[in-house]
Length: 159
Image (cartoon, rainbow, N blue to C red):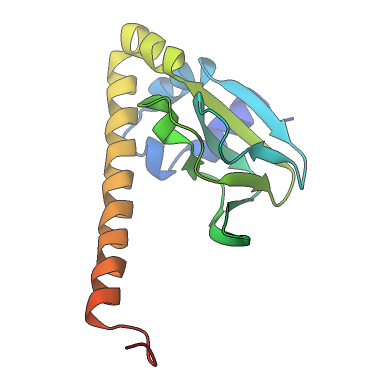
């Protein structure tokens, strides 16, 4: 299990926390729950209700979608990556499994934590939400480009 100071060192310089001062990061992380997952453990399960997001501190994870009799590997997550963020804005179900590819240390963030941070550490909460927004916009731009590419350059052999 990582100590608070080890977690802080691992998060410094990660995209979610680039704008944070050392003190803001320490205060914000104190509000979060540390979760450990063993290799092979399902961290979140597709179609389960979402109630939190996670930040991967140590280890690695795979994002797997199950549908139409197939499993699709959507992403490989590394330290500093996050997932489950949609649960902070709606009560929908999880769109994929996230499985620990190695022993993992994660930080769990709920809507209640964001609300508490906004009240106690408003600057840190603002920086955190803006960072999530920027990263999500980047993901959306990549997805849009892939979609446009499939329309403009269809796969060889398809009519």
